[in-house]
Length: 302
Image 1 (cartoon, rainbow, N blue to C red):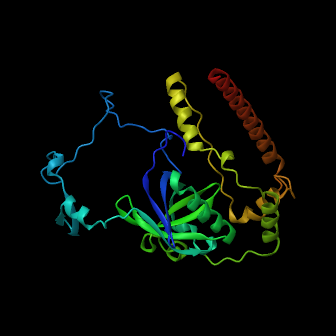
Image 2 (cartoon, helix red, strand yellow):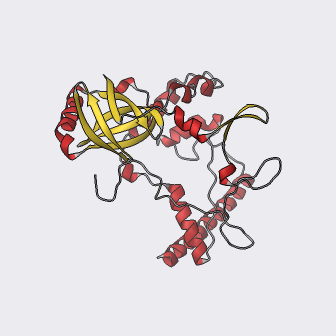
Image 3 (tube, helix red, strand yellow):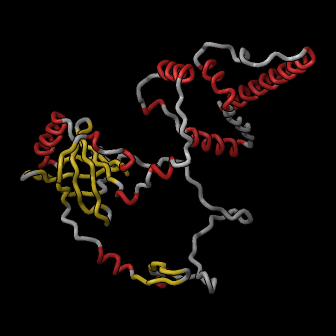
């Protein structure tokens, strides 16, 4: 692994009678995101977190804090951290492969967090044998071990020159989709509406390239911080217009390029048409002004 990256875990992989040393490295991290501190508005100083007794409202120092499991409202079983630590199974630092399965057998809703697996200097040959064997067989591996003080199920898959180990959520942690979708109305779309939807999908087909996806929230935060530093105000975001049921077919036709934006709108009387023209002129004027302001802001930013 590249210098500067530290392994989150070091241990061994075992499949059959073959074992070799590996390191586990974080594959996805949020450390580069913009973060904020909590500040006292009056003084401008950073606020520290303290723990308060819910009844006495007095500060509880760290040495007086312990764990508790609520059995009734306000009634707790006190459990010391040492007792919690004693329940953690002993780790033998071994990812022992229990089975090889087809990747399609695993619903990705169970995926938790990905890690890169790399071999140590002595285990490169065994590592390559496992990686290339899984590639040829088009399978993934299920393994278990103690990671971060908990027993974890891990899905191991070939990835380039290495392996990806993804921790898996347990079945009780994944909520049922039946409850999520139980209020969904039973609607069968067919005819022209279905054909138009398929046509739009066909014209939008592409390939997945993560480099082309921008974290717009992060970009907006960076612009907000920059605007604050420069004493500028940010433009208000536009509201998203949701298609109404009676306009859905017209919107699909327009998306497919079969009609103009105004083709399905009812004709207006002369008075209403004139009023609409006035509104359109005003809208165009507002749009021109907004574009000019945006251009000036970009020049100042540059």
